[in-house]
Image (cartoon, rainbow, N blue to C red; front, side):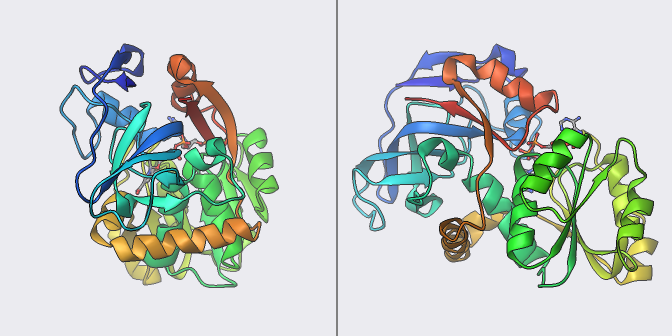
Length: 324
Ligand SMILES: NC(=O)c1ccc[n+]([C@@H]2O[C@H](COP(=O)([O-])OP(=O)(O)OC[C@H]3O[C@@H](n4cnc5c(N)ncnc54)[C@H](OP(=O)(O)O)[C@@H]3O)[C@@H](O)[C@H]2O)c1
């Protein structure tokens, strides 16, 4: 099979397309013929050798894909050859074939095509787990989403609305905020032109109940100070490249919680909870409350252009690579 290959940690431009042996499933694994695969910001960190899990080269990157089951292990009970599914492997998705444990696979919702479904597992999985298990977001609460037009950000906007929250979307341009409004955001803040903390405080009665932060850096300091009493601050990621230090007195003064979110590891430790979350997400997709936002699709040969949208901060929603 052909696969995008990382031969040494470094820039995305150094990746090459190589021939690999087809994967063979173990007892509880299955293999799909990949139709499309979603790009996520962490892929850039993984390829550079700067992610928390460092994979020794050579390896095939990519953590989510959609496709058709082409082989199953002897103990696979949830899927059969020919099923259309979504997978969230820990690596290996940017290839013509991809192998995963059956617990990291889910049926393709019939409302979605392969490209929409390819950018679904990591972003919805992360935001649903963050808002449900980590923040325990309740109907009527206020949710502030930073980087609200990005891959995980736009799913947090949609899921927050579906959970009955009032959603404030914050992003760096009016184009991105229009995108977030179209996805359901109630209010918007352009943090390139407006002070985040003051604007959010003006929009709320004493601050927000939950902050969803995939950006970090200086914005994180402002957003923490925009929390309400008993607020929850979700540490999702650091797309700005800057890991913030949080002053503990702010947590004390608001009885606030700063909660880390690491969906991939949570899902691996809680397979039943993960399967349940994905079933709930599929139900929301079926009801029309969640609509995956894939803005750009490229053939695998054009991987550099696709990754540039993300590294240059230009992506709206998801960017997807086509394998078939
Ligand atoms: N914790 C978890 O389980 C988990 C799971 C998936 C992803 N993540 C993390 O979440 C973060 C976002 O991932 P994603 O796939 O959603 O990325 P993405 O689509 O590129 O979105 C990231 C957003 O961050 C903002 N940003 C600020 N400074 C940036 C910079 N220097 N370069 C790029 N973007 C910048 C951009 O919004 P503005 O231009 O509006 O500021 C952008 O839309 C990453 O740090 C990733 O590692 C965490």
